[in-house]
Image (cartoon, rainbow, N blue to C red; front, side, top):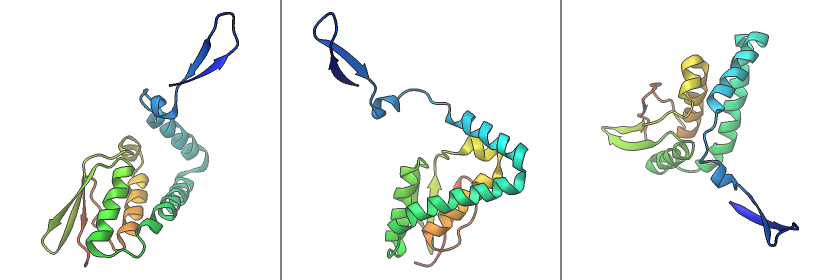
Length: 149
């Protein structure tokens, strides 16, 4: 919370407002709201437009995050991908496995939406492949990163 002084009958008068960090502690209804927006768009525009919309969202995610992995190779690149996934709420763990790596996601921050629209999983998968720099096995709970490094 932050406070500011203002004139009033009693002194000092302080007005407190929530900071963005404090506001984040309160419950939010983003899943329900986003689902309603997607459903309304789907009803109005159809499934083709939903795919196009999610492609644009995926392109934005890629444009935002790809510069952070460019120039990195091998384990360093995969570790940076893990960091990016962690920032987005996926709670990932990167483990060595045979000739490659396994990236286990312990959370999906878009799970409720993805259960209703598989296109969201496809968007996340395309984003992950762009960051990794090679094809990854599409699995909802474990994403296998078995590329050459």
